[in-house]
Amino acid sequence: MRLRTTTALSLSALTVLALAGCSTGIPDSIDPTSSTTVSARPDGETAPASAPLSSAALAKRLLDESDLGEGYTRAPQRPAQHNDVTVLGCPALEKLGSEAAVGGSFDFPHEAKASFTYAGGSGSEVEEELYSDAEGKLSRSVGRIFEAMTSCPTYQVLAGGTPVTVTTQKVLVARLGDEQWSQLLAYSVGGQRSVVKQTAVRTGNVLVVVSGSPGVVDAHLAKAVDKGQRGR
Image 1 (cartoon, helix red, strand yellow):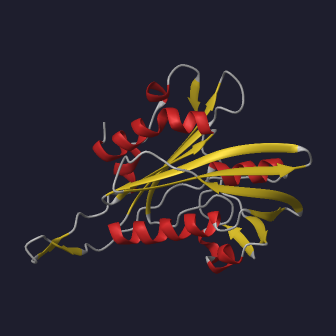
Image 2 (cartoon, rainbow, N blue to C red):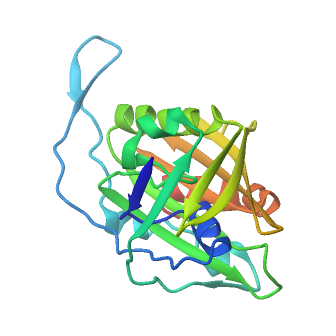
């Protein structure tokens, strides 16, 4: 399956492309107008569901350097570029088309993202992604992507012609919202190996995704979820 990654790449996707020696890019977020949906109330009546948050509103809920602690610096956005990624040996991912390649780029219209580097050395970088859409759409789309990725314990990715072996493992995560998903992704190429943990938590119409080394994700996940939901 050949995927052209045109939306923002997650940290795990960036890891694959960096190991393979490919260029990477993170485009600006977009914020089209979306319609308001309705949901059923306990009394059986229908009421307008909460409208998705705009990308601008989500951006204000991202973690910042003060949340992460000393040594972290926000990385500047890089200009968007196109990268062809071919996934081999995972039929479930092939069915998803361009929705996911190597650690997921989630295709929702309202989004905000931030990446942070760490002065203390590599291996402590972290990326946060916030999305907002109708609750049902968030649940179905994210669940489908995580299920597809963890259904293939091992597969290969061709990034710029360089083969990268990917192994995935579903892991448990504390209940922090209405739904949560988490996985470990290990990438191997040319004798190098990198492990990324990716955890997603949905509460209502907001999805928080944190990616990075397992320890870093565990340390900052609860704060990211709380700030993503409350805006403070």
